[in-house]
Length: 185
Image 1 (cartoon, one colour):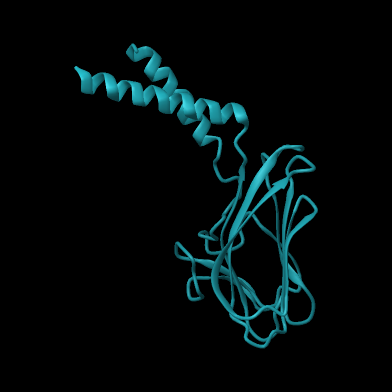
Image 2: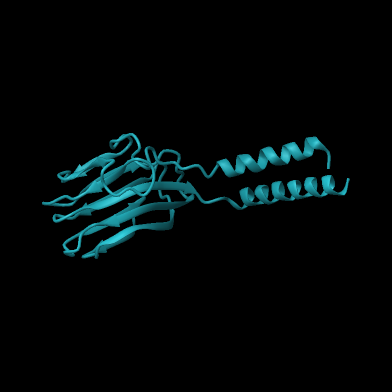
């Protein structure tokens, strides 16, 4: 294979891989606040801190509404109606009383609902969901009067289209061919 073809294959493969970029603004709350997110409902005992359990980075969000549900929303810019997305986040519960609940919705569909959950360390939750509208809404709801829920590393990424997977495979084949050619010389 000549070098121009290999370069074209590599560029197409890297473009296909970069299409999986996280669409969430401030996904790990690393701004130290809720920049990019909209708080709603009971926001008492809710915030972003570096002194709470953190999954990665320097900050995580904590939620402990005491009177009614409260949480955060974000319209995910770049989502397209009819496209599938991978919604992924890390969640922890510090409550041992069982007096708690939380849920997460994407584009109006409930992906996870926990009620009377026991305490647990950070756990990764991953879902594939269809956007029913452009700029789909990601909605987190919490209630936990005795202690806190902790949230970190939220991501929404497009599911690769079959054509994108083909470009990735083509790029990999091109690289294998280039390596074989160098080894045989």
